[in-house]
Image (cartoon, rainbow, N blue to C red; front, side):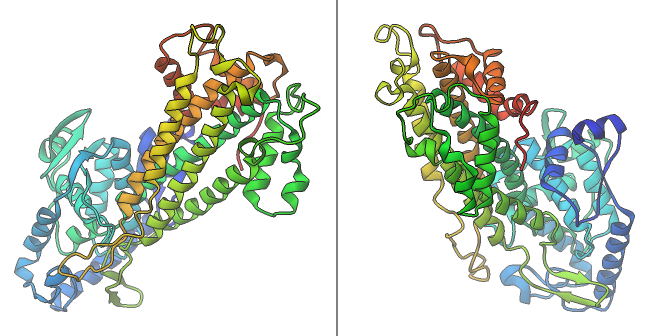
Length: 517
């Protein structure tokens, strides 16, 4: 079922309980503005943890971040009279992020994830704070959050402080496309600024929501691009009249990787009925970029499954500090804010996405190189007078090279901070931002393979395509005509990339071939 369409038609709301959010839910709320609410049981949990916190404050117990300072200042006692000022000062002093604002969809995902984490009822905030977050999200207020400044432990402190600022009427926010002060944005949406009480500033800024929000959206895009890459790889196989043996299920059966089996099976479905595959009876086997599609694409499929598992654990976790457990009557200070699990997964996401681009670029090279393809040089008539798709391969090579640099793992780095109190950090948000860039570059490489493979096929016989690839060819040709002579190339590339990025290529093919796992 198209859940976005379902939500719009029924007017229903995605109800949050802190434990059952999916990455698809994140995409629906972030990108399609599905409204959210809080389950009643979650509200009860929030109320219990707040009652416990207020008892701690009344008893003047020593609790980190509530009756003490932060970081190196955790030994400094704070009086009850100063508790509210402590939260205000915390948010102001930590709002030190720099750089370009995160995109609206990322900030919406951040708000959603912060709400879901608080819904577990371990953070000691008032229900009114969570309700305020819900209203800010549902009414379209988007806090301005600069993208740089997080170490990924104690969570995403600096960028999340900018989120908290906007909730209190400070800082800045976007509303209906216009950038304004936080107080103006709240007023325009019919909301009042929120005063943060004990623990609430800390609960808002202490978490992994920035890295995880970016990671969820990058994962969703990578999942779509993985399916698109199956389609473009299949098109290239047909353009190269490849030997089908490499995709035989017997080969997958003796190595036992699920991604390999899935990839080979989908390729077989895409090229089913093809008159081009295996047409050269003298060819025994193909180059690795063709023959090893099940192994390389399959490894990415398995990596994506791992990344999804980590993200779905994290988006349903409590990752601030300290944590309150009302049922056990315990308050514990720990390190759930540390982003290492997410950081490592997002570094892996970048590597897995980059490898899809790397093998696709080698296929593009085989198509434009007459020594390898058996087709006209650079896939153009009257070569020499025309350069054809020569430079499209240059562009793909440039993107792939850039991705190699971006794949240096951020999660292996650590710079101590807070006078060495925070002496090991994850750099998870750096990993997330790099993964997002790798995925964006991958979309362009896959778009170029789509353009080049369809051009190559038209020098053969498009009517001989398989049941899935034929739909992909038709869909591209609705946007981009066959290149008879040189034209300005970037608009053609942009159209092909847009088909890939928006999911319209995969949607067209799935009329005939289900590409889901």
